[in-house]
Length: 113
Image 1 (cartoon, helix red, strand yellow):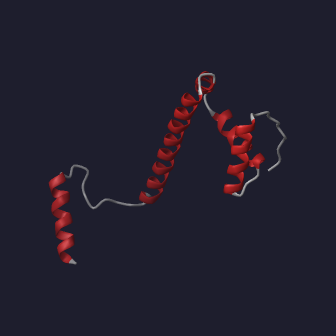
Image 2: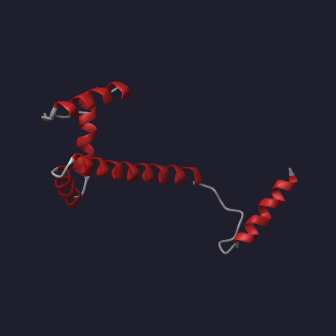
Image 3: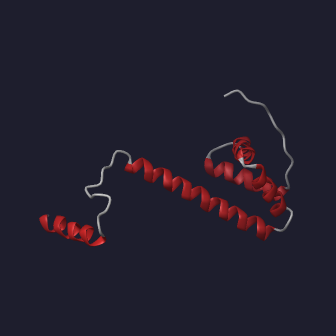
């Protein structure tokens, strides 16, 4: 992929975290920075505005926002994996099946084995 170099300045603690992360992920610091930039530029402007407000607050606010973003990303990954796993699956039940009918069916198929 053709690209351009974009430089950035960061504090020493962040630079150390990037270097550590790059080593753990077997990636270069530039690859880590590029991934962060790809994510940031795709955020809606209101989310970027919110991030700048949070970033200006304190480390606790930044950590909480990072955890919330992490949860949202993991939920998205789970939803995609679930959809991929269910692709082509057809339920043996009609749309209006009751909980009791599902339980009865589960008991029936476990007795067969």
